[in-house]
Length: 158
Image (cartoon, rainbow, N blue to C red):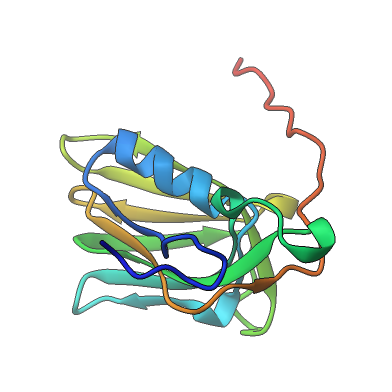
């Protein structure tokens, strides 16, 4: 049995080894916030680590009805390249909010993990295979408000 936090929930610990596993991590990271400076690519170690302020969708509502947030670390191994679009690395304090994490396969088992952030930025992490871990690394705290945004409309491909 794992250790429960003060709200009675287990801290989240997820492992992703394929695209289906990555969908679970994507759901857990919806509306997670990160500082651009907390996105680290260690080229020699072939690893990307991101520290998120994650909304606990699985936790339900707490006092005040706005839910909880928790610090969570995400790490990908077997990373060959990282590219960004629409994000500024000049301000490490700039915030990005994760809307989804997708996988675009290429030569199996590799592909690109695409982080889609609100306001149009994305981060592409090219991997030799999916090898990811997401873990809560702090106690949860009451969120100031629950995420509230309209469903994103995805245009059809031409």
